[in-house]
Length: 459
Image: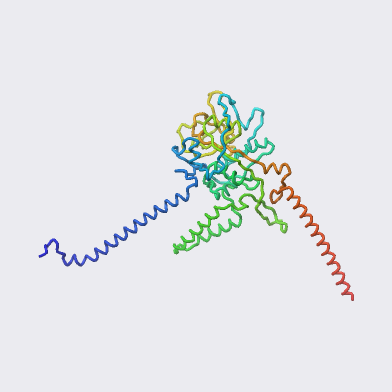
């Protein structure tokens, strides 16, 4: 006989199917929840890896200024930093070495500034503002190209002043895997772009502080936004599908650079002066970097600066510096370590009253900031990590020299070889002469036909 404690009463027996069904539903729900958590984790991992810079810098993120932040433990000695943070298969031009002869600090001048040399000359060009016409985290572009402009000025011995096209870096460098445009990058991204492809001057593109878009692209974008705003949200699957394809197309567009993104020209059409036509310029004057490299430490930076020209240094900018600097020698007391800003360094000096040594550098926030756009920061103590990562370039202006010496000629559609330019002029003259003869022949033919028509009417 079965014990009472093991017997199932009729009332419990009736509830068994309900209990079993509920249990199965609970297990099914838990399994789905587990799969959902796994899927979310996988997607978050993919999105982080997809959005990270190709340099794979650990914990790197774009700062408000544009330089990619890095934690202190990631920045070791210069050699290891070069290997880890700037892999050679990406930064192929980072092969330059510091000057062979390193002059001891006590043998270097007490004051030196490329913007104010002892003979009164200055090789420093105009200053820029990265924040207009809208905010753009492009300090790495401005810091690198300020130094590039001035080194090219030095290369041409002050006879030609160059202002390189910041906008072209925003348009084209991300598509080459170099920087993130207005979302940040490194000075090395700019120098590598110049090493691979060359860079035209600012007469090719005005700075927009965003990626350039043609009128057609702007209209298409506006049309798409209008369509998105009136889309029926009920069809969620279709909505997600369209969004996926739109993102895919955008991603594909970012991976190439059109000729009009590098250089362009616009003029009224010959048929109608009220209609403007824009076209790509395929052969602008480009400026190149033969090679570039890194220096760190007070003496090495001073030698590079003194012997070869201005360079670009990264440092850990803080809010107090950003908003409260009004001039003088800045000293940070917060022990800031996150490198988040790039600037051009043009010289050094010593304060007569305090004896404090300083660097003189150019910011990219307009001439109304700081000391006419420049600032001074304490030298020799690596304050704000200012003396850890300074980039320099060896530049090449042979295309400009070819134009200045007459080997190449320029026009509305770009620069061409002298022989080709002369051939083109001859062809144009022949074409014009042929058109003139054809016009005269047509005119005579029309006159003859008109005379014959009048004769026929008389008869």
